[in-house]
Each structure stands twice: as structure tokens, then as C-alpha cells.
Length: 71
Image: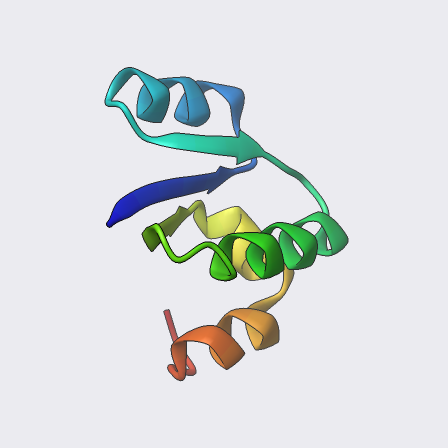
């Protein structure tokens, strides 16, 4: 099981890379939706780390994946 980072910040992304966690930098709700769809299909990825700003761009989508109304 691997971690994967979705970040809106290059510095956060680089910090995760230094810790050995792959990921990508994205900014829009459409990019979040596409990235989550792709990542959730990968059976090797077990935990997705996201910045709060990205979560706030599309809370309903995040709710569909987590089942929790407030994150």
C-alpha cells in the first residue's frame, strides 16, 4: 500500500517527495476530480493525502469518497 499526495502547493509536493511520497500539483476542481478518479483506480495506492485548499474546492466529491460530511 502506497501513499499519494494531491497538493496545490509546490513546496508541499516537494516535501512529500523528499519523504518518498509521490504525487502531483493541481489547482482546479476539475483537476481534483480527474486526479482522484485516476488515483482511486490504482490498487497500489491506499492513502491519498490532500491539502485543505484542494479539499475545499470540491467538498461534495471528497464526501463521496470518504462518506464523511466534515473533514
